[in-house]
Amino acid sequence: MIPQEPSVPATAGGPVLAAVVVLAAGQGTRMRSSTPKVLHSLGGRSLLGHVLAAVEPLHAGATVVVVGAGREAVEQHLTRIAPEALPVVQHEQNGSGHAAAVALAAVPDLDGPVLLVNGDAPLLRAATVTALVDAHRAAGNVLTVLTAEVDDPTGLGRIVRDDSGAVRAIVEERDATDAQRAIREINAGVYVGDAAALRRSLARLGADNDQGEQYVTDVLGLLVVEGAPVGGVLAEDADDVLGCNDQRELAARRRTLNDRVLDDLMRAGVTVVDPLTTWVDVTASVAADAVLQPGTQLLGTTSIGAAATVGPDSTLIDTEVGAGASVVRAHCHEAVVGPQVSVGPFAYLRPGTRLGTGAKVGTFVETKNADIGDGAKVPHLTYVGDATIGRGTNIGAASVFVNYDGVTKHRTTIGEHARTGADNMFVAPVTVGDGAYTAAGSVITSDVPPGAMAVARAPQRNVAGWVRRRRSGTPAAAAAEAAENRAEAPRDGRSEASGADTEQ
Ligand code: UD1
Ligand code: CA
Image (cartoon, rainbow, N blue to C red; front, side):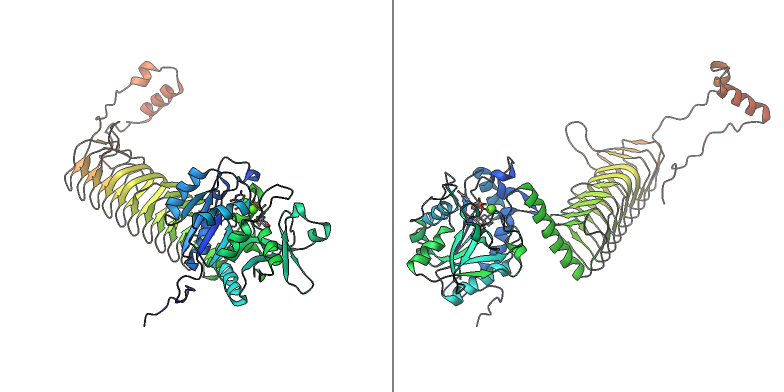
């Protein structure tokens, strides 16, 4: 016997849903944006992406997405996030009912239950859609609409029920009577219906309404007149069904989505110091005992290990942070931060950065394509581009890995347990061997053998008495004279040390 996946409501006859049809062709005029509405993003996905993610676990036989306004951009987006989906073009936006008809016309052989869903419902969850489909099947309906009780139904379609509680119609606010406007049960814009019944009634849709459009919502009324069994299922969480028609609603949905993500994280043992300024994408993950400080953004596929601390004021995009690491005031993009690593404050980790266990990238340090070994340190004011730094090595302050010759990027390799001086330029391609030292202020243009000390700077020359001769009458000259009078000033140069304040 083949064990069935419990999360998949499939029957022996194939998928429960013949198809999901996402209505995503609308202009989204109220967004007042050049970006097509369904491509606006929140919590790490587009509006459309959230809807597709919510219906994905139902494993419908086909996914049809009606595109129109900004269709090229939407189609491109679809190839990236849902290549299996079939885009169908609605050339003129004649309403949601017209969009549904165009979708079903593109799959003429399709039969059985079809889920129609607005493309602008980013808070929809799989459990809510599954409950709708289950109720639809249990009732033997030809059409079932998802509804919600809301405090403020402004702008939404109202669910009209008769005295027995049976759903009779959906009325758009602009076409509603005062009595209907007082109804607080609204149409979520999610429907499951039999394909044949939908085709039949969509073909009969008129446009006799305030907007002169074909409304998908009128299908319900037509089926009621036919005497077909229809129903409404109340969503458990009214937030699930909220659409997104303008920028203020987008911000509100983003906040709600974020609250949900943070609630889940906190329930799982993550400390979120300030939920109001902490933003975590639905695609990111955070392990228990991690601490998120105020102003933290965890975006994309970012993952945070157990007991790591991130923030304050840090943005991590597609970045992996190991257990026990600390990332303070940093911007990190496609970086891998190993366990127990310390990053920041004020660090910029760019793509291809890999920090080994216990490594450190300190203040005002930028890294890119940099493999920094276990326990290696780049503490201050340094650019590390296209480099490998061995374990236990320390890079002196204010150094630059000079990777670009104006045409091509080259790589620098620093061995293990090396000590490079402050203010070094490593002119790539160049290699510094294991255990080597370099002097402060050196411009390293040729390889340094293991264990050698490289000094690559002009020797110092002191011109005795210059200030007295050339700057007489200045405070400097007076100070010099006083010092000379007091005692013999030491005249030897500095020793050949690796430089100022480099952490060891
Ligand atoms: C719609 C419902 C309303 C419901 C609300 C829930 C209709 C007529 N009204 O209103 O009852 O309470 O959703 O949020 O459906 N679309 C197309 N082609 C078109 C027009 C629209 O694909 O020609 C798509 C849109 O991209 C959108 C969906 O259909 O995803 C609904 O259209 P929208 O204009 O957002 O309808 P609402 O006024 O929000
Ligand atoms: Ca809408």
